[in-house]
Amino acid sequence: DTAEVSRRVPVLLAAALEQGNLFAAMDLRTRLNLIWLAADDPNGARAAVIEALKAWPHEGFHLQHYTSMLALAQIELYTGDVEVAWKHIQGQWKALEQSMLLRIQVLRIEAMHLQARAALATAASGNDNKRRLRVADNMAQRIAREKIAWALPFASLVRAGIAHQEGESSKAVNLLSEAVENFERADIDLYAAATRRRLGEILGSERGRQLIAEADSWMRKQEIKNPAAMTGMLAPGFD
Image (cartoon, rainbow, N blue to C red; front, side, top):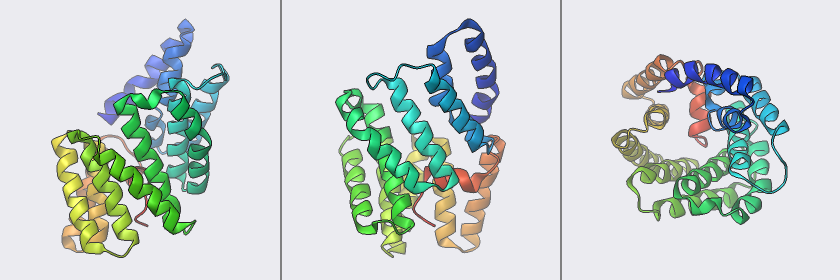
């Protein structure tokens, strides 16, 4: 529940700072950084990450460095600074691999999908299109090989973005429909809404407009102020 998290994080963060709990403050500012984007406040989101990093050791590559990378890349995707997001991820990827954090399946899938999102976003903007789409496809294949039900719609969403950029609209529609169904089955509601919105944009018919309205309505109930920008961050590559 994005709305509930958005209400609770400021209270928890204030308490963590008062208690001098750097671990909790770091986690709230980075892992839950999405709440600032839900409020359509990317500048506040970035400031929260920078403030968290000031108090964290620079040596090594810890979980907190990963969540900071994730947060900053998502902020850049949200604001449309997609090449910055791509370069940020590439600059951190080797350290992430060497950290052994990718042995954790949840983080591995999340990180691969983040890289795929940046690849799709930059490919759509015309930067090294073919190579970036190959990166996105490679990430989608690796996600699908995880053979865990909740990961499959992330692979489908990436493949839909690739199909759309390659002019295969029918394939993109089928993949998006499949992703919506599987996100809903896995109770990944935010991604289900963003994917439904992308499906509506591609369909462009009365049904498409209805899907966009449904997605926007759900997001606004979750106190997400800019559904279009949130969708652009979660499901890039369709513009």
